[in-house]
Image (cartoon, rainbow over all chains, first blue to last red; front, side, top):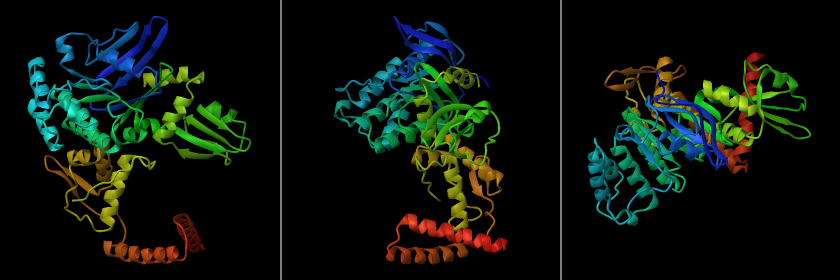
Length: 299
Length: 130
């Protein structure tokens, strides 16, 4: 099946700053992909390129089979929710639903009313009087009312309390369960990602470090703990992503290139999503990551 | 109908947590053959877990012969995991709770109680081998 979102060597430079460098990713249909990386890693740039809000300096992007562009037919299929939630504070939710009906060819205002009704969010109050969590839900319900095939969310839950985040993610996951929707969600919150996302794109230093199904990525990595400082044998067989050496103990995050065969002095453990995210974020200065970017990207 | 509780930081992937909770409910007799599991939509709305993850958990249970998907109707319990009938688990659970209460009263914390349990597991495993 062709991926819904695919990029090859996608690069964006602003004057002398490279915001995104040779980004190659692929997201299959129906996934909720977590876009993770330190601040300034290029997450917002990638989302803006995919939404057609910016044009690449080099490389290509394909969303739903075509290049992202500012034309109504393409934009009708894309939902984009920017970090600063774009609502008119003095207008009510019902007003927003009315505007959406004028601006969008296949607008499903009823679904927005039903979603917000389930959450007991009043439709007749100015949006500015709602809580942050309620405003985020209104923005998500409006974005979903467009009936997009692709939803791009730039840190929508970062400012919300845990309960509001849970409700927001439940609404999102439920929309995906309905079918026909593919999501990229940028976030810093590993626990949220572990719960709601089944695909991961990890950016660091404007490059892709990892891209793939979460369960596959977890099964391809191990944490090795041992007393030995000499790790050449392990480095010959596997890719060391991160090494933490103390006088008595060495802890390695490795990407497996075959079965784990280590001496009895090494203890191999499964990795958690947090191990993986922190390991690759911490390793972004490592020369090995250039190669990993290709491995991750071409999978 | 059972409800799933999915922890974000347990280190156990959500799909395994869901499958484990179904097996546990079967062992304890909370779910019986013919009972319906919550629909994917219901689990997703209640827990915010990815729908593909819930489907994967249900497929794993199906492969183990514990549940079956009936097209258009949902997922139903087909069998129980091997082991004694649910009454045995309930009885042993009570006995173990009494033990834990006694240990707490004696001033042991959770870590000390867990290590006692591990020692007991190991000791009896050696008995079986010998």
